Length: 369
Length: 182
Image (cartoon, rainbow over all chains, first blue to last red; front, side):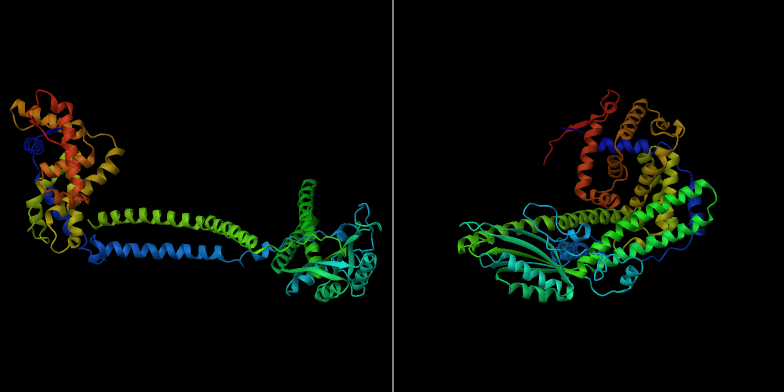
């Protein structure tokens, strides 16, 4: 490769550099300015092992980076692994969250369905429809709001479905509860024909556990499941939002009394309509929540003995192991996906810190001079 | 500039290092007035922060580092944002003392080639072949590793050799063929 000769280059540069005279005034100016300037600063200097490149400094920087990134990302990983964090929202779904009794009494018109009489929610023992003072008093009551749901599969003797339904109805009506809906399919006497029914019972929360045990005595229980969900936070949040909106509405009503022009009145009216709409919407949600936490819902499925149930058959050991393996694989993959976010974040943080550190190091070195 | 310079003697600094620093800055910046400004600022900064020269460190590369940093910040911050100074002060236009025509032509060619080099290459060339700093001292002066200095010098010499001005007949700079290793 063709290269320029070093000696010749040096000579040429000397030639170029010495092409002008250096003025003496410049050095005098520097001297006078240096004398008038502040005395040399006694700045903080980092210890030598920080300034000098080497293992010590590398180790120190690495330790600081690990601490910073670890401190940031560890809580993220912990948060991901905590199953109780999202429990409140996860458990919110319930098969009986729709309450037919709130919208209409009894059941919809499905063939073969018969209504055994569910009281409307405007009954005296139902606080849901109470407005105004009822809501305010509830807002001050910070006792936990728990919604309870459950289902029981019962087998009864052949031809005893209607009797069982009647027994179940009597269990709830005597204790402030009611039958929410009933669906029954009465089979013929022919062999292979079976009757079955589903009844949804609503009882006050305090008697829910009692009801579950009483229901199990009506027939042969094949399965029972119950769940409880604490919705206090959601409840309080709704109440607070309603209270705030009502306060706003009061303000607008006050403004309305002072409005003189048509345009002002219309504008305020528009705002009031919006607020009213929001309040009613939230009120509806609160009513639903209130009902869910006031009443426990128990769905009872009745089948006649001899009728095959839908309960899953018990798996063999190998099938169970296979199922466990698949579940484990899926769980592992889910974990991998879940931690990829914090990991990516940690990598980005490390990269950013590296760039900042490099930039700061160079700036520091420049500033030192 | 010697390594034995008394750090607390500004007059000694100036007597010993000022002329060469100005000429170095001139080669880097390509303008005499800018060079004088930069070196004045660099000397004042160096004087102010002379405590930062750690024990056992060599004075010469340290001072050159201040000068190079000041030149770099001038090139980065001031010079690109203003109209070019009078062309009389430019590298290519400075009158040459020497009255030998071939040497004038040679100097002009070198100036032109130097001006076309990227700043980082120009700095190492000037520090090596004008200020006569070793590669290690240049590494300290520009805050880079010695290997970087070596590769920059190599690249700079290659580019200079390829420059049209230095390939013309008026250029009397001899060139050599070197095998590139690594």
